[in-house]
Structures are given as structure tokens and as C-alpha cells.
Image (cartoon, rainbow, N blue to C red; front, side, top):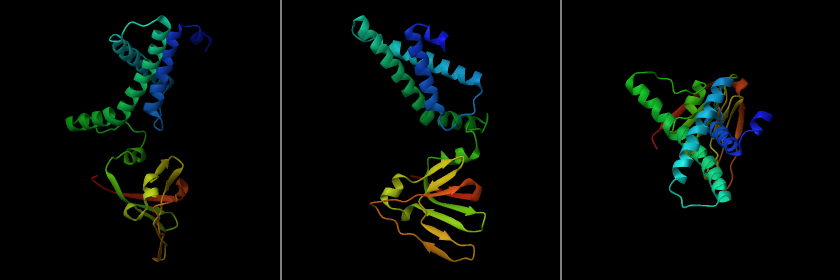
Length: 203
């Protein structure tokens, strides 16, 4: 850390921007070795600083202090924009292109669970089959507007979503009424889940 702090401030800003870009691009999806992480941070640093330099090349002449501030803001801003573009647009398109070319069918998610969760088509219904034989149903047509704004949270420890119907193991069921002005979320631990069925449809 001392060696890093002894480097020129502009280099520190570039490295910080690269780290921020890497953090945004990989959050919730990190299985990097230290070497891979370092190379990705370096790549984001170089690309962000290059984008910043190209942008500032067209800026009017500024004083030294203002120029430094502009470099810092533009470098960090470039890293954030590039990371968001990679995460939301470029990576999915790249995966589709490779699949279309028959090169590979790996979308570079850390698990099939994450791959399913990133499908952009609209979710119609989710059925969560529990180990005790019961089933939880989330029918998005029956959730309130507030629930649809907080419709699904998925992590390695389980998932949370608004449950609209509960099917008991004996075949009986009970429905839950949703309202537009409030919402509820049910947390289901991963240890209780046997299988999850997702029903999708186009937006």
C-alpha cells in the first residue's frame, strides 16, 4: 500500500477508477484469481484513462488545478460508464455472438442459477418447490404495483420474492391478496428449496 501511495496522484486516480470499474462489472459475480483481478483492474484503468484523455483533448484550455480535477472526474466517470456498458450490454451481446458462431455457449456467469436470474424476458410465474412437498407461487399478475417494484432478490443463501399462493403438500392451498400501496417479501432459505421453476414471456 505504501508503494501505491508513493506513485504519482494521477496514477493513483487511474488505479482507483479501474478498481471501481472492476467492482461494478463483477459485483455479485466474482470468482477471480488475484492475478485475473489485477489484470482486469489494470485494463479498466487503461481504458478509462484513454477515454478521459480523448474527451479532454477537445476541452478548452484550463488552469492546472482545473485540469487535474477534470482528469479525475472524467477518468472515474469513464470507468463507471464502461463497466455499466460491459455488464448490461456488451457481455450479453458477446455471449450471444459466440453462441451464434458456435464458439461456446458459456455466458460467463458463476453458476446456472445466476444465468437464469439474468434472463431479460419478463417473469410470469415462479414456483418454488420446497423439500417438505409444499410449493410457493409468485404470480406477477397478482402482485401489487409496490411488490412488482421489488419483485425478486436472489443470492447464494436463498431468495426473496412476493408469494401470492401457497400449495400445501396435501393438495390444499391458500392465496394471499396483494395491494398497490404496500408490498411483502417472503425469504426462502436455500436449504429449504428443492427445485425452482421459472415461467418467462417476452416483454
